[in-house]
Length: 80
Image 1 (spheres, rainbow, N blue to C red):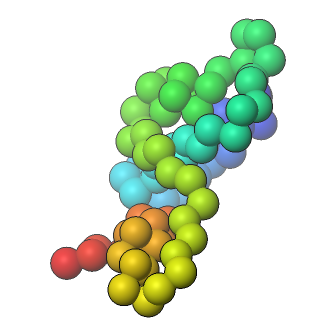
Image 2 (image 1 turned 180 degrees about the vertical axis):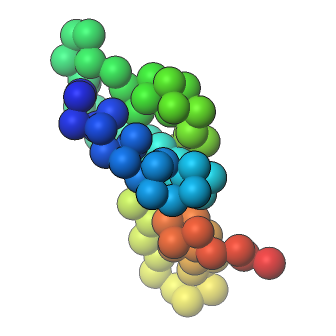
């Protein structure tokens, strides 16, 4: 994953240290190749927060809070 490392380094360099940067982890049953770093490994290597997410869907408007939280996180919006 040299390209992943390069991209993370570029974002950290160009965003004031990447303080709002995090690694998103989703389990879709796809394994990384042997020796490939996982999102967890890259997060640890670069000192990133690791956030476990998945697709969020809701049926009723009153159930939208989880979706809002995911959107807020992805766009670094303060939920307060």
